[in-house]
Image (cartoon, rainbow, N blue to C red):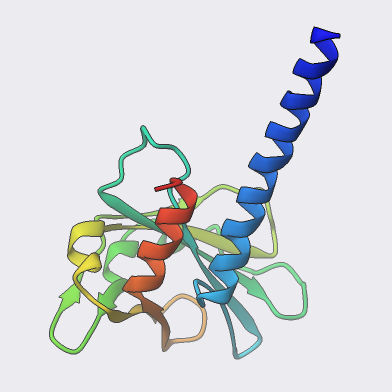
Length: 166
């Protein structure tokens, strides 16, 4: 009998944890922290990556930028070193009074041949002070245009409070 009760409690606990992740992802979509832009046959998808562990370094903000071809064909030339190195000059966060450079930009080896994916790392303390800002991508790799994604600092604080169960 005790085993059945413990098993039932574990199932309820696991279901509750799954609902929490769904709630976080839905809130990411609702707060415009998952954005997609189509420019010249390329799809740019920017997503905020909330911290999910309480022991993790919470002084950093992570964004993921996925670039793919709109028609699903493989991107040509992405093996060139310019798609993997010197990326910190292409990204920044801009508001009315300041421009913040990233702490680190890394290309993610995700195994896909029809795109490229980048992890953008910024200082959280500098961004929490900004109520509204834009993640700016000076795209000299794909479309040769400036691509901006508007982001709310309040939305990031809200998502972080949900994901860390604050």
